[in-house]
Image 1 (cartoon, rainbow, N blue to C red):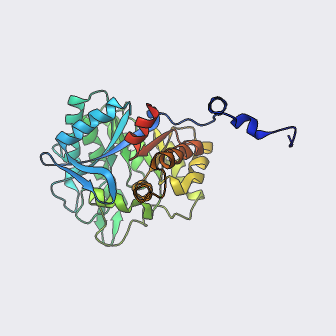
Image 2 (cartoon, helix red, strand yellow):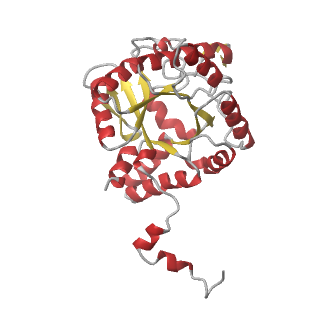
Image 3 (spheres, rainbow, N blue to C red):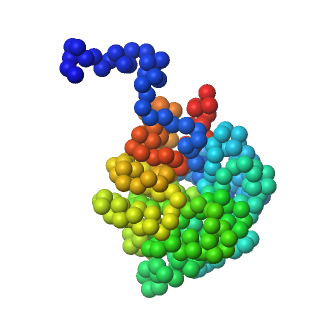
Length: 324
């Protein structure tokens, strides 16, 4: 096909034609909204580095969960800010922990909303790392015991899906075994399969109060320079019976999203992380970009790269646009 016989602009002449030949679609059903829950009453504390996102007490979380459900967004993913932290992150797997209480409250008031829970220790440990510390590093196999307990406590409280984000080796198999042994074989696992040690997480650590008190997470999260390692990580999770795979972050890793989509047939989730959200918000506040257009272009790009679902702090804004 060559010019002038072929003219590509024929298919772009007006909005109807552009809609008719559009290849990628972003739907409200594709969105998952993250929420941060804290103990207390009537708390709604905006996160300075994430405009429009809040640490909230359970009563306010429930109200926002209703708003999310009314917008047609099918799911939220919950992160907890406990009242106290210790070296073993005991609030993470306590029956009366912040996430467990939040799950029950949402399920009581908004039973149709799907609840996904982040399964990790970093929000609950006083050292800010994702597991049990021995020496100067996280002990992988000891941490698996805590992750099993945490995941089980979440589903016993009513979680619909658990999402391990810790990047410990063998965690999917360990959690799957724990759930199956306790009659929760029907609960899916959404694995943070390909999670890079990224600088894009900075605002999230403000939101979840989870900055490591020493060192960093590069001994368990992936090197941003690596591509082939992503295939090995995802393949391990498939063998261990993950039900969803995830790539985190998304924006700087669209090539990895496409690679994972082409190699595996499980539903694929992109995490549009805090730093990505905050950059768009900050530029929009400066008047440098059109917030709505850049947001929608970014999310559509993640879908085009291969994501089936997108976890995004933009979810409510995007849903309002998609709902017209």
